[in-house]
Image 1 (cartoon, one colour):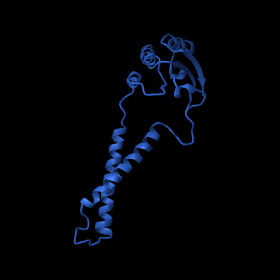
Image 2 (spheres, one colour):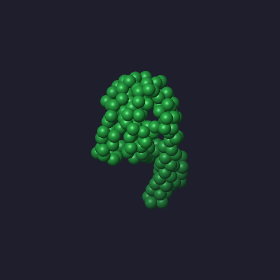
Image 3 (tube, one colour):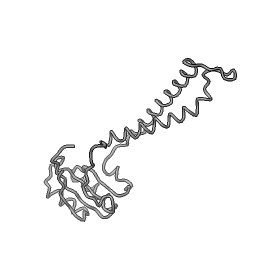
Image 4 (cartoon, helix red, strand yellow):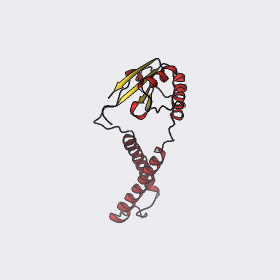
Length: 174
């Protein structure tokens, strides 16, 4: 994250007003940095123009990796590296491997998803997130507009936010 970033922050009281404001502000050519809300707002991701996430593809790839790794490890250890004759059964038969394979698939998929989410979201354990307004975790909805990403002035963006239902407009510097 760059230092010396200037933002215009619009605070909204109602999620329906916020949703229509996002659409109106984007129609006026203003690029919205992010919208923060204390609870999920249905349709907000479409209004912001977000594409569908690719995290399910990552989850599938981690799961397949876990399945292959579990089957290979069990087959190698019990079939070739240290085969044991237990009741005259095959050294490497598939049915006893299913529970461990399932559990390792779930484990690797879960760990992989958490790590992928943290990397994609730029959430490092040694950095603090930007707080545009503390009330965004309580009862207010906050729209942050980065001045560096927009051609309009701070006053024009503030007026657009006010005209579209923002209860207050502030400036935030990081």
